[in-house]
Length: 418
Image (cartoon, rainbow, N blue to C red; front, top):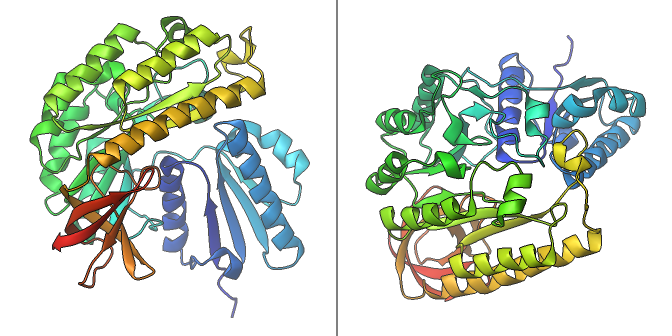
């Protein structure tokens, strides 16, 4: 009798890639192939990322690692999926003839088959693929192709599935979820979709929205987030920069003044909201004066959560050919300055939490205490709450925690109520 081959996967990059990996494994597992850890696998799959230079290097290193396992006889086959394959298939085929297959773009998955790669108590739901914004620094539209929204019926079937599975937190993701519906309905329909999701998510406690492009955040959407208890009061608002000349070069379809007004509106409509943003350090031709303007803005606005990225010069993007490419040393210095400022902001934000009692979702147990998150912290990217409890807790539990201490980005507290 022929032995059934076992499959292992290494999923690199963002949660959107993770959803693709879950879909790949769902189809494979449905055909009878067991999914196992890579060290027990016969077939090794890598779902790669190629968004920026560091991600490409990580993907190449992962391919080399799996090919070494194949050379040692511990893997029979190596299959490379995803963005790197889509972007560099011919070069990779020449460079790595030992790879058994290169598979590029993974289609937006309309079926419900999924092999979960997240803990059982939270999940990601990808509602759209690619992007409509065409920022000059971004390769995503070239890799992913035209923007696609997942149809309403497929979205709601997935939500129903998560609801039945007892998921505590649902993270709705896409490169830019505010674009949902632009291809299917000729206009953005995110608020409408969310209202329909609420009807199916009766037992899901938290719904988190990730990646909201500034100029399509409507007052209707903000009012919905504010009024509905299930929505985390957390807005992920990637602004990338604030200087108007740089914003124009980035092809960001928004202005400095519009961004300032939007932030004020968000904080007015959603009291106590936590804002997260992302910033690019060292964009081509960024002057010291323009960078200082960005720092002043960040100091004034005080985003509660912030991620910074060093500009990566990606071929086949408009910004690749821009004059005034910034030396790596200066880019790193500017990145460090942004993160140094954010550490101060984060410390101040966290200090205001001392004495407060907040809802915390438990993620795991560690060394006799527990790691959890507030509604203001997305999985993997934001801070943690270190929780002490006299009662035994498990992943997926919600508890009331009194905060009594802080770390640079994290909180420390004790359970006061289940």
